[in-house]
Amino acid sequence: MMARSADLFHSFCLLLLVSSASGFVAPSSQVASSASAFSSTSARGTATSALRVSTSSDVEATSKTPVAEAVSDDFFFASSSAEGDGDDMAGVQTRKLGSQELLMLPRQYSIHLERPGSQPFPPMNHVCAAVLSATPPVDSVLRAITDALRAHPLLRSHVRGSGEPDKRIDLFRMVREGNPDPETFVSPPLVDGDGDGDDDDTMMAALGFTARDVLTVVDVDGSDAAALRTSWEAKFRQDLDDGRWCETDKGPLWKVELHRLSGARDGDAQCALVLSFNHAISDQSSANLLLDQILSDVADIDEKNKVRAPAVRSDMPLSLEESVLGVGKN
Image (cartoon, rainbow, N blue to C red; front, side, top):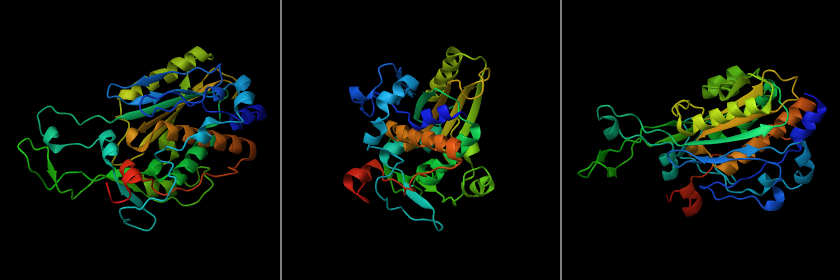
């Protein structure tokens, strides 16, 4: 990628938009007037926002006060160490899902699935998108995703446990007693590496998936912005209500799609990143910070062939209940 494109990636500013679930609004002085965006809500009430990265004419005015730096409410970016519920082996981090996470996962009920013709409850999906002014190399994106997997336990986690109680004690079989097999986040550790793809075998052995399973590249027919927008918006809408891509018992619980124009020259054309999450592991502020991290890593890799400031390794973040009430009081 040309140096100009790398400089643009390195100095980009995220625009934090209105989200009906989180209520976050960027100060007007931090939002470039020429940026465009839309927000949407899935049929199950999942709030989502599409982000647009500043174009070259916007960066100079906004890069000094990136909105992402002011965000503190997040899911997979833990601000303090979380006490796990117990590890099966050295380095494995675990935590039982909180009630909000169970709603979004969602928890399945055997009494529902036992009914003829019943289907599993669909997940709540969280989707966001960013349109970039240049197209990064796929290998750079893969290395940035690997860095994110190493840093954030929920991004490399899967969920184990049926959540079935010992018994149901009311007439309608809704009141639960006991929880011998709770739904639990399980996040294996990842060894250090340079993220250049040579350690895929190690990652596969630890997680059951790699950055290549997180990233999908979509080559869009055409060479103009309209074709690109049509492609990424279609995926945005699809992923709002269709979570069949996510196998929670295997992971990953998130994915990234790189939509790029097949008729464009080199990396100078626009592209779009669509990030989709099982909503149990994400909120919009976390998605903003993750996107910031990925694009910063891509810029570093493009310029220096290494990440100058790798993401800080986090512990498993607390659930919402633990954050408010304290560990063990949910």
